[in-house]
Image 1: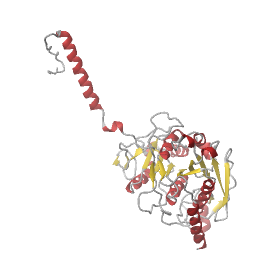
Image 2: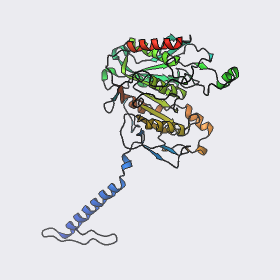
Image 3: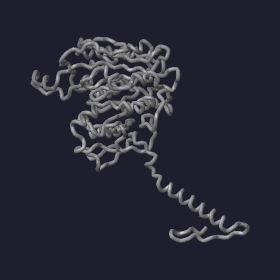
Image 4: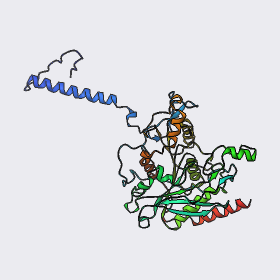
Length: 417
């Protein structure tokens, strides 16, 4: 069929039994429809279906980023349970697809390094967690330890439920779960299991310790042992880590009450608490299905087992004065080198997706400090969808009795040495 050229009138084509003008209009309409289809196809690029909230292990150089190494992670097209939200989500909605089951790793998967942190500024007392049960224990250093447990009403009838272990940031305590996040409200209805009989989840918020500041430790010891003020000991990765053992004790208390689904235990932390979430997930890869961090870079702990470390989701600001966007993305690239399943959300100050790290001249110290302290409450649905997409490949009725006993023996031997 002849095709009209721009600027020329279309030539009429006559056919027997068909009035000329109607036939001409039909041909013109068909030509316009075909042109529209071609134009739509030309404007639809492969990147139009890409979800920017996924870290897919594909990285490209970006000259616009202010990274010291000149690059940042770029996402490709793969759907993930931790992908960014595309619209309002129901708190009771089931996971969008069956979760990925990860076989638990045997023993601690972190090489021992560092020295135990024992220089405390003071011993912290019982946290004022309202509307929450407070668990108590005593760590191997003799300090009383506490954790707040936030559970939905009727937890006994819904159990076993997923468990999120929340590690608070430096300068905070377990009450930050209510002050900063919306996890209590979401825990009442959000379904991480896909089973209406087990809707909701439990939040366990262990309290950290008040270590001395680096300057205090340096003055008293005459050395530079500590480089950060963290509420949990992440510098020491041996089995004698009292913070790891303390969290084990609190999780075991909930397991003994048959409240927790052992296939769905997750770690979550903010700032230096994110370092602890990553450390606990790697040292307890037989217990934690996945972990997530906000405003955290790579922890000191290094993965030492065959295969990739536990799945992770990193949420961070394009402008952050504590852990820069570039440092977080170097960690993401290191995880990619280990073939670790990782999702990410790079956010602006309002919690919206940001295409690249902020230029240094647009990220002042004040703005970066505010961004670092502002928990991304609006992106909690993304976080929960990520957790819902990962479980441990163990029996639903498995218990931790044998593993806990073995860890107790190992820690006793370590303390004896």
